[in-house]
Image (cartoon, rainbow, N blue to C red; front, top):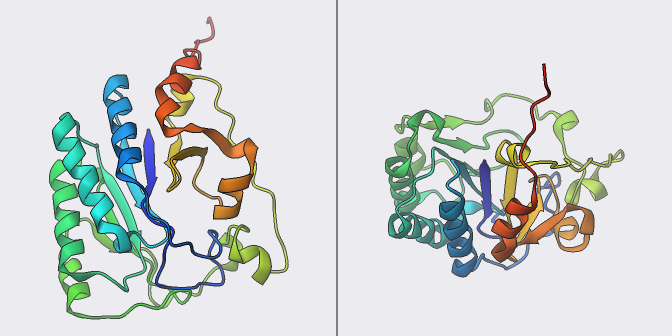
Length: 232
């Protein structure tokens, strides 16, 4: 399972291609993180965790709280993933990444990416040089790579700033195995939605992508049938 936690809807950039849309001054509540982890422990499922936003470096407190709860509940993620625009790295972010790495059960699936392309601007400073030394760090894009418009997801700001659009289909989850192989997105409002490629507007207003409130996740999970193999 890929657990994606939206730790904030705030950002320190205003990108015209951003699928989220206009930023919001909202942070995830600790109680939502606790509820999700307690249920994951009950289900005893393996998972990777991704911290997203907004810009995830703007709410390191939530990531630190996540780790405290993992220790309290005696659970570990397999790996973790963070993408940052690089404008607010700092030593605290580096320390947080190292602690996430220490918690990981499978170091191969640990990764921090810098969105280093011409759609983002970042401040190159000494912290960037430090983070380059981490074995799990990489530039998401080559700094000389031209920004590929074809990869834009037409949600949020992109709907207003680009001439063409598309409707993204919702992945249908039919059984527990499919859920275990897909993304479970916990947003700042304590709702679990289907997939990560949605604007804040869609997250808040489209019933077809809403799965359940976070405290109902086990109930939802248990309502799904087991995967049935076809008889050969």
